Image (cartoon, rainbow, N blue to C red):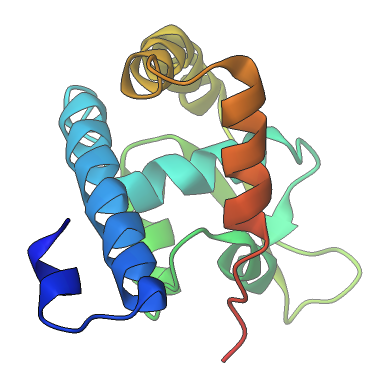
Length: 147
């Protein structure tokens, strides 16, 4: 029995704490891996989003798709652009819109990280069967993240 439960924590509180604890452990390992390429998790996420949209995306669409809420999206995009991993250009259709596209260097850093990220994911979840991994994904997706 966890100490939180002994102090009267509800099953919901205990589950939320377990999710937060697991997320923290995963985040620490991901941060360590990505830092080998000079990336933060948010920068990596921008690149993954742009890899899936080779035609480019407006800045606010990238912000909407990020895993973590990012109030400083312009600063985040600036940093990734300084690394040479994306380029920005004004939209031909709407001059107010700035589209971001992943560069060849951005694709290369993602390709370099694909194997190590997959391996890290496997290591972190190695105690779970495939069915349990699918169930975990289903359960996490069912958590209401609306404000």
